[in-house]
Image 1: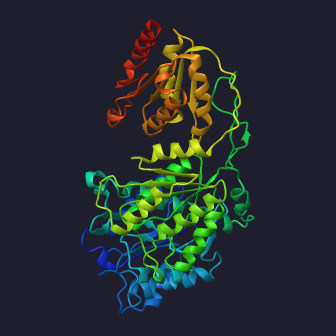
Image 2: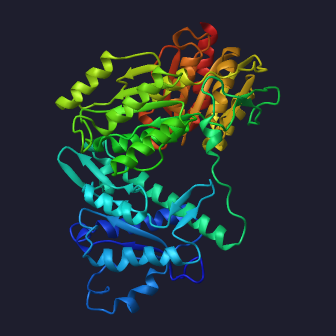
Length: 535
């Protein structure tokens, strides 16, 4: 199957050391999973060159230029970076990595592609399956002319450094590692952006506009300007919400054991309405690390530092100072001289013994809490980010034109057809207002819900496939309407299919939570509503 760009042989080239595929066929399984994920992510069918059998592939004795040069004429190069990949004498490095870099640099599209958001990214997309030696990181960064930005498939546990497997997603001891399914999706999304950028350039249309970093860096954290939006709501409800100019958080680089936790925090912060910097992997060069840290701090309105029992990488000229400590010191100085906020999250769920250097660092922080600083040992990212939002967001609120009603029924657009079936039944007997939360619209509806729920006798939050949305949403709304002192009870009700919904409940005062079959949901809502009237 040819490439989506006709003058190219393949869309994707997979480069790896054969010994990384001998033990459990990790690379073979990765390529298979990636093909399925790409089919579900892109409309185009992409061609992938993958030499699975070394006996059938290109050997050291072959005429490499003739055998391989055509196959290397591809759009995207994916090196599987292991503990042995960065061997300058190896076939993969000499005959695949370096030739592709040279070839891509000189072709019509260049090595770096501008994406729709205005950022640039390399056509070399590293997949890292081990935490590699520092000298290997430096070698890669030298060849890539910048910090290593990889998507990691690494199982992290005490004394363990191995590739992450699909089966690890189901193991209890993997609770602090990356999720294989999510990482595959990240790869597919990164490829989609690259293909889109390449096709856009091939079309001859004007380049995407560059990122307006100045606008981001000057966004005020004291006041968020509001703008009107439309939503799937009754016509009589009008409202204002925060606009797309999101405030920026400096999310400090962490020790190696917290890398996956930092990645998940990035996702949570984005969902909560924040921009996150820096958006690349931690540089290995110490001076570049300082420069990148200071640049990112200068563009942010607050910082978040995730710390564990590990001290982190130390500076060569000062082994009493770690990379995480340097970032904290810079943020603390900025907090003392401005309204910049510094948040510290101590994350050690397994209660592991703390390293002496880290213990001194943590004690120093606790003993020197100053203005604009907050120290937290929260157990989860959602609670922590909610605390950050409460400090950082001071929104200009507008009174919503709400309406007294019996039942306020809230659902996510993923469950729209099933919700319609339920509300049609309820609407025949009771006054009901509905709110359909559209994609990327959670922030828009929190204030609406906060003002509409007290005007209702019962609030219902329904889900079938949108459980991952429903639980965080009800927790935040419950707090905003007064928690146990709220005049309006909330019914969190979900269907028992899919079966994973069984455990998706929320216990709190003034909240009824239940998971039941679909055909019994309307009657259950009626029962709860009647009980509310009897109170």
